Image 1 (cartoon, rainbow, N blue to C red):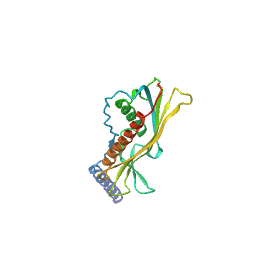
Image 2: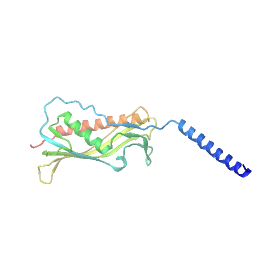
Image 3: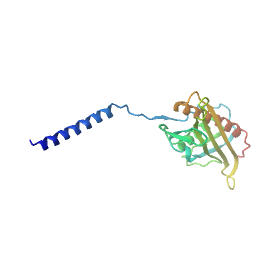
Image 4: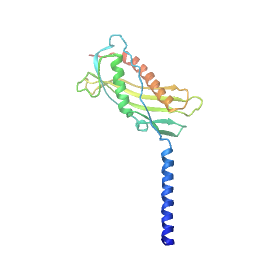
Length: 210
């Protein structure tokens, strides 16, 4: 074999060895695994008679664009926010909040019955809303918290123009023990529960017509 061919063969072997070495290094690196979370609600039945002997339909809850994605969102300072690619909600926040709201309303028994958005039936009252904030507030490293805020509208569907009978904003910040994604997710569940407790008080105080 000529010197030129020998040098070419040596170069090929060297490149092949480098590729194999890099591949082996890549295979030995641990894979990055995503973690998934859900808003948790211990929605226990109230046990009392319904406050309103009428049905209500949960039409849906929109989520403000900064928090509409599946990734957990952190507030780092007054201007900066960040999203966590490796820690996400298991389902999109819009679907998650809407389904949790319908489950909670049905479990608490505030109305005689609660219809989910998928129902083809109509109800004399309807609920919808907007989640304005859902993030981990990490601005103060000594006192991190999770923030949940939403606007809720209850309308009388049978009235002309769908008369609004309740329109209110709810917001809570739940203290969390540390800045981890798991703590932020648990804190969001707690802040959501606190908002719902305030909402229940308002719903039971309504004077509704059948």
